[in-house]
Image: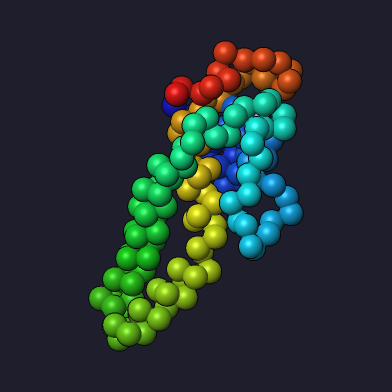
Length: 134
Ligand SMILES: [Zn+2]
């Protein structure tokens, strides 16, 4: 299985890579406001209730390593004080929070659904991958 990192990064539909997962414009009060289905290929973005609970573990994995490694590097390699490294880490966590929150769902959906090459020329055609692999 080959993941399209540009589609994941830009929150595109995993099946057609054209439709947006999240509604635009972005609202800070509801950063996870998603389309129910893909606007291009009609893929169901929430195949079952609570589907995105699995994205929690992806979010946890990304944020823990992304925060732990710079903190360790600052303390052990650059000889920062632990409190200074902690403040930097909290600041870094705050500015990356929304991106990680949204991209975790995107990664999870891309891991669950397949890209359908037959949609390249006819994005509105029905597909046997309507329900993904679940
Ligand atoms: Zn789509």
